[in-house]
Image (tube, rainbow, N blue to C red; front, top):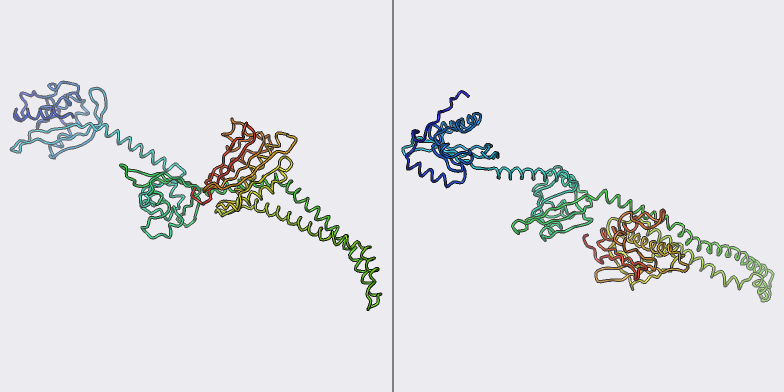
Amino acid sequence: MGTAAPSSRSASTAPGPGDDVLDVLRAVMEAIPAPVFFKDEDLVYRACNAAFAAYLGRPAEDVVGKTVYDIAPRHLAETYDRADRDLLAQGGTQIYETQMRYADGSIRDISFHKALFRSKAGNLRGMIGVMLDITPGKRAESALREREESLRLLLEATDEGIIAADMECRCTLANPAAARMLGAGTAESLQGCCLCAYVDPAGVDMEEGDHACSVALKIREGRPQRVIDGMFRRRTGEIFPVDYTISPMFREDRLVGAVLVFSDNTQRRQLESQLYQASKMEALGTLAAGIAHEINTPIQYIGDNLSFIEDSLADVVRILDGLRGAAAAADAERGIPRAEAQRLLDEGNAAFLMEELPAAIGQSRDGVAHVSHIVQSMREFSHPGGQSKSLADLNHLVENTCLVTTNIWKHVARLDADLAEGPINVPCHAVDISQVLLNLIVNAAQAIEAEGRSGLGLITVSTRRDGDMAEIRVSDDGPGVPPEICGRIFDPFFTTKPAGKGTGQGLAISFDVVTRRHGGSLSLVPGAAGRGACFVVRLPMEAKSV
């Protein structure tokens, strides 16, 4: 290095401050738990405390009178000596960090704090150094950086949008997925922005600084919340469906905001719509033969009645022609003789026609109405429905579903509809609730059919109001559901039916429709003594966020 190593000298011969000052300095140094040393102007150790001696692994008396070259490997001694000489040249204080190996073999992060020591006359007398062990702090900083990096990677890797918001619904943190779903470009561009225009379709019309959107109000409630089928807005103005949760954030027991975690359900909604429609088409396929039979019966007697009317018209024409001819030959003043007129009427079966023609027309009209009712019920059942809920009468839905499933159950069971008096209007997706009812009625009929009983079983569909909930019960007197599978019947693709009889999706879709899309419940109530089953659908009578 081009610098000769200073020689060591004994404490008794080395120059230094007065003994009284050194004694005070030693006492102060010993009171400090961190390693402390004192060097004179020649950079010779004049004193050190027990902590410094322990760091070196040698007695303090073996340190005093020596230089750094005597107690440290040369490559380290040169580094420390260069730092000491820089301090002597520049004056003031010196702080730097380094790693050092202790006598016990451990490597510690050390922060050196050094300052020059002068006499009252201002003469340089040496320097005092303190070694602060910052290993715990360094490790904590490293752990914090690792946690921050892990959090960053987690936020960037997740497909769900994550936003931290303050009490005014302003974004304080967002991940890339949130920015992407909201069309905000980058996560950084969201920070500091009011989220009302994004998380509430009505928020775009609010006054700047109002911060009173539905999500902001939920944040201020300070409790965890989950919203199903909510609506957010992209920066472009496009409204899209989401599920989201709100988790409050507290600092020292004070509510400071919340974390929103949300997912874009646009694709899921499309897939669900396709699945629901496919399920309905599957059900319609199952019902097709029965519906054709139900329509064919009235069509047959309508056809028979039309043939009867056609044949009868020939008799009517003959009567009218006879009466017209008799009228032409009769005396204008006396008219047609009564006997002649009666003969013509009798030959044309006028009495029979007068009785049967109105009956045939009435019966045909009833048949047309019956077919029309079936077709209308099928149209309502197969309609794709809308995105928003509307009021629907559950009694009407039950009646329609019972009608379109007639050919499914009428050969194996009697169906009793015990409907509440008056309409039960519920905000719902009517087509989806009809699908649920169809699944439950078909399942009940198939369960009874599987028993192979000689007589008819019984299916009961009832409706009632229960406080702020509406309830539909579909029960049967079939074999029931074995207790060991009761907990699995709503699982997707779970079925007890033989191959070709079911996909295991009917009850799973029904459960999703009732619970997730309507905020209600679908449960199974086993029958008494292991006989029969009762499925209970409960729907809120008033619209609510789910």
